[in-house]
Image (tube, rainbow, N blue to C red; front, side):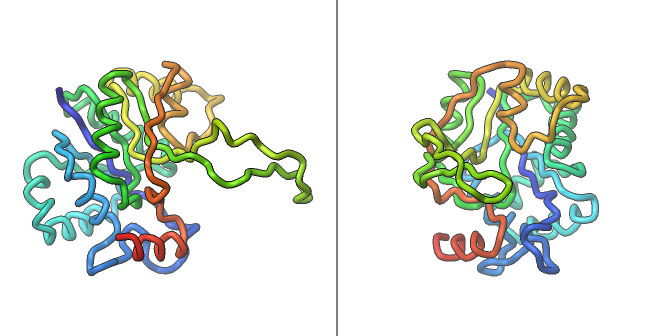
Length: 232
């Protein structure tokens, strides 16, 4: 059973602001993406594909070479490829690379700025994907959700019983996922999907939810960064 991990490190950090891209901000002298890799590679994936801007590949390799816990992995089965202008295109570049260069059964796609996912959560996701072909990590919505109009007037309170915050990793049977994303990219009516389950479910149906902690945050702004610093 061969598994491939895709880690997306290609974000431009427009929402985060500042001169340094969020994935390269250092906490305990290590960039956030390195914290993410250290955490993810506690689970034994057979192959790792890192997706970033072309200009960042050299820098990423430099940081990985400094980190003993992931350096050996990088010599055996780590690949570096260029991302796209949007997340969906970065994922597409990754799975096409895998299709052409790696024989794999399952693909797991993870945001490079989600450094707090636990090994047990990854294990639970892996087991669910093997049984059902597709699954994502997600946490229950606990806040009351309001829908508003263009003038910020509340028009509806959404029933949160069946609402979840989608997270990553998200895992899929590879043959199904490459078929789904190729169709999605070639469909001129497709919007810019912000996660992989949306693409998969459009063509293959059910995607299982595996509960994860709300601590599995994506570092999008400075508040998220402060949460990571406190929880690490």
